Image (cartoon, rainbow, N blue to C red; front, top):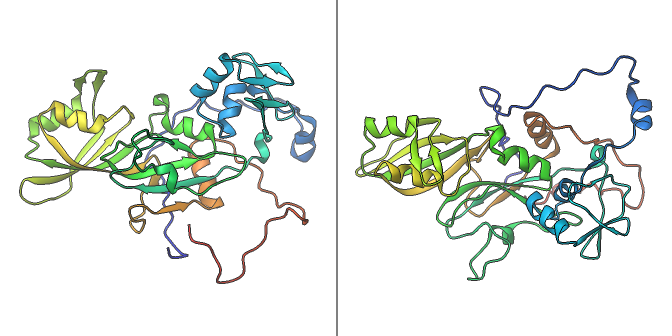
Length: 311
């Protein structure tokens, strides 16, 4: 892929993620490097820490803790227990290293999912999975931000941060998902009103946030659709509920991340440090310390000119 590309991030017209305002700093609180050295590391819940380390989802980690598969400092962990990066944590006997939040590098990768791929690490039927297309990483795992069903293509986001994935997925943050939807047949004004006002599905009422015509010929018409939830096959079920069949579905945007036009099906692109910071600010998350490492054996090597790797 070309070395220069337009950033896939674009700021939304209105703030989308709603979080409580940050508390005012206490009077007399020291600032700068001395303050960082004096303040103890904040404890976090164990299941959240393990998810942030890329071991699995928060729900999976809670289940593993309840099953007794996790120990902290040699003792069986308890659900709700809090830890820091100084604790010795093991999952099924294997040590998991936690990094302090201010030094933890967050990686974000976008992938153009193809039809015929599933969003799962293992499939009993032997079908292709999106995780087979991702680069291997040490000391962490890629966490998928939401899912796309077998017959849907388009933008998928993967990250090593469980907290970022949670902020993008959890319904309370109301993050927009935009789709290009091709329907077979006419979507009448009455049907459009139903979709915008809300229709009853088997798991409760759902609706689209916006709906706009996007061209097409003959019986096939394209629409741009925005929703704020990520229920199973939600877009398809919404259109089915008003009597219109979806013949093709492509996710084109998730929050502030848009699918780059040059990213073809099956291709991936890892966001650079500037793009990751921009996404973290948009999600109202702290920016990890990115001060350069001291030179030495473990310092990252600078690639030679003209040898930049493909994303």
